[in-house]
Image (tube, rainbow, N blue to C red):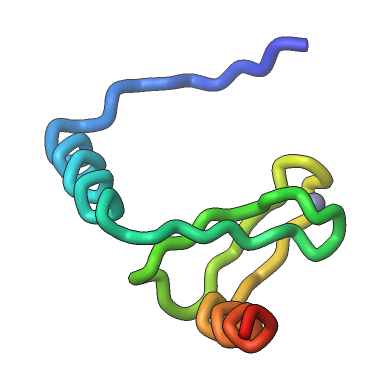
Length: 80
Ligand SMILES: [Zn+2]
């Protein structure tokens, strides 16, 4: 099965933003949030990620909205 996805090079401005974003996260800790349905790693967030993010699980296809800050607190609680 072949999907027809058109891929094009991002604009010069966009490429700059991609490079800058990569540099910005290089020194940050990354954390993966697991899909609550299948426990596959659904999304990666960084230290400066705040608020809500929507992620579609690559494995089961479910879309979940996560509140990154509340997940962080929860994890902190559990690990200590
Ligand atoms: Zn899933």
